[in-house]
Image (cartoon, rainbow, N blue to C red; front, side, top):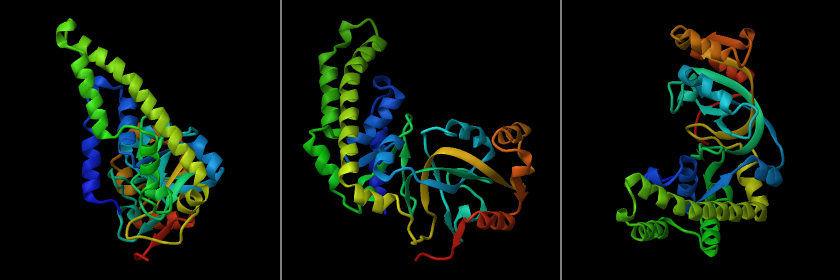
Length: 294
């Protein structure tokens, strides 16, 4: 279980890099490397470790986010899905976790990773998923940290020292304005960031291959365990099989959102109904409603 303090620390780290010094995609990836705790998962690498594993699962969203699904369909970008939801969880009623929900996609794809719990995976803007090392390496908290320290990569402390060196090296009086000053620092830090990210990914990819058996055991094999919440299954090469929409949502949905939905499936693949009818639809597609934490 991830502790509240860990989440607060991650939030602080991710917001601690100046936007004006890093492109958005670099800032995301760099932030995760500086934790010295996360492993980036990408289909090309995982196919070499666990192979290609076809899977069907469910993804819940709300009408306003229907159109965003097209960004991952048939691509290497992954989405978070589930096949088990506790009876008391919002997902068991067709509701969302981070959104209002009400629109449930039955999808197929290739497995990137899965666990019987929601394991708080984080996507970056390039399509990688960042996952805490202990989730991947059979509960071992030190495999990633030890390898990253051995590779002599930066953590947040040493990176802030590097930024401070850049600030001292570049004086405002040498530039016509603040934008030019920031651009000079951004260019120089960009070289360091690119090296940090590449070496971090190379190092963790080697760990995934070295500890292949642990990886398969931890995030590739389905578990019979359940929780009081839901499981999490990351899939890519996503295809939509059919859709369920809660009637209370459908009655309020804008026509533009209905048109977006019809871009994914024909009308006869859209079922509209109550939460009880959703459960029946979900069960018929091998979705599981669990009753307790086992």
